[in-house]
Length: 277
Image 1: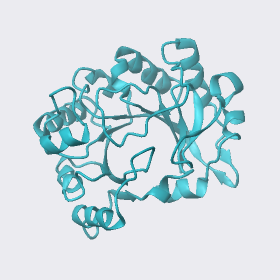
Image 2: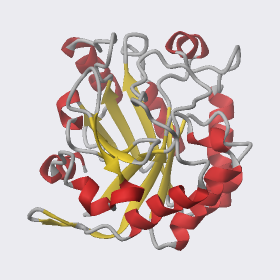
Image 3: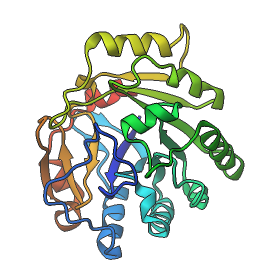
């Protein structure tokens, strides 16, 4: 099994989703400093993949997330290309709004993940999935996905749908199957700060509405599946863990102490990681 490291490269985003957990304490973003950012990529490329009793396969995958990473424009494209050149597999999680503008990013990606909580424009406005008065329509989403697939026929496609108080009655995850994704991930809204998430009954209803018997490309993650099961780097280049609903716990900066030292400073459960896959 492959090790995946999620680098939340920026907190900046063109959306304002009400449940967003992308907030980091005293995070001075390092992406403007190419030397520091490239050191992070180098450290990830050389990480010791033997963790406890588990040996993960190479290459490691570096997943660029945010915030919205595409707000960094050409800088992000450069970093993803560099990661690929260093032997890493690469992936990107985006809301898709800026994907058409930076379509060349697809050339260096092994996987593209798009966060889609609704295909209904009014629901997206309630969630905060809008840039001013503009939302990414279903037609625009489908068009840009097809453009990516034409540009990079080998790219894997994934959708993430966060179940929340505005979309729990919808069939968005099922509707996304029209684009033939490799994976559709259904995530329960993670309680964070003032947002407490949704009920067990609401989450179960969404899962029933959006899964079919025998379907193999749908993954469901409840809150307990997420704790200590992700390797995540914040915009300041620190590992962080999400075991506390009010704030995160952090390692020292990876580009200063090295990735193996930083990993020892946070909790990571490879058993739960493997179950997610």
